[in-house]
Image (cartoon, rainbow, N blue to C red; front, side, top):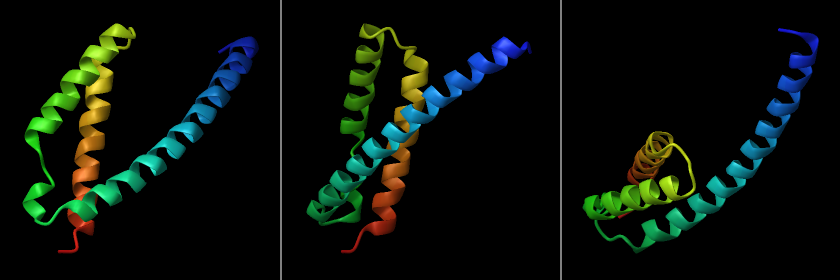
Length: 95
């Protein structure tokens, strides 16, 4: 890689690092809301709502296409995020 391209790469990586930091703040905010949602659930079987998951994924696909984002990327991200929060809820369910 040329020295100029190394410099460009470092600049782009710093931009990605800043975005990652913002994403972490959003994940923290989302987690706090999920904790509140979990308190409303009386039974562990209320954690997974397949209709809601399907609706979320449809909405994300539609928004991704509208915003010119590869929907395969966003689908994978959301599926992993949903599965991660399902796991979080199951681990933290207290009833």
